[in-house]
Image 1 (cartoon, rainbow, N blue to C red):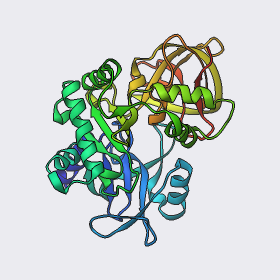
Image 2: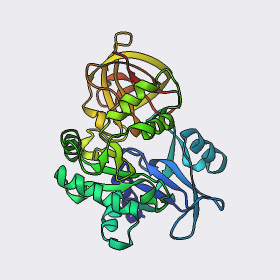
Image 3: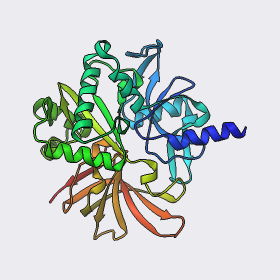
Image 4: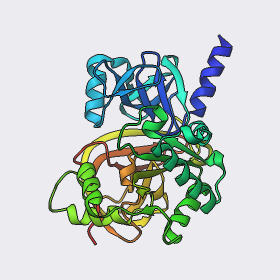
Length: 344
């Protein structure tokens, strides 16, 4: 028993954003964040096994991708409520996988290393993924242990038109990647979003609100962690390692205070390149509001220092358990009605 408990604890400590979990009942979840409850891992449902699925794994299981958070939650509530769990620490219900339900953990770094060895057997998407990774490894002075491949390719379920989803682990490697992409000038084969592709990204991520569409297009066109490489869409997710976060599970207690809209000024955007991302703000209407945070990649690089911003999301009170210190944060990205926009 002690050996089994130790193994589960080690597994829990090793799970990071960007990894995928295959459960014993063949569902595929994406790990969210790097801090998890002792007996579970916070992970969002990504692919469901179904006989009419449009994607097929190498083992012959057919899958369908579930896109919106509400659809994922609805599917689990109806068919697999064991993956929905109320967490007293986070103060809300989360999508989680019990450790004893895990069949396999799919690791981005292992996936990319295996793809490098495919040679002529690689698909055009796989070859482009390896070439983009090489550009970053050489241009940003990365180790191959700093970078991996996530998304549909990690799950073995890539389809026509699938993206290149890269993940970079560690604060220093992430900063070097961003610095390289911002200062490198033109990288052969790589471009920012523009034209029809930009319009598609804005519509798919943010809907078709005509009022904000030009502003959102301008924001998306300037982001360096996304774009097109050799005709393939790409997104780079920067993830801090657990020992870089400065806290563990239970060190902070969260309470949901409902949906709020706020206006403030960004005073520190240093965490804007990571997933999860955070923007330190000053807000005259809510003096204890410390930051706007998001667990969704689309809110990275969204606003910058000194920008006046408006935002809507879930307001949370956060208490530091060791000191009793408290502050507020606004979480954006978990509702289709959430937003974070510069207005001045």
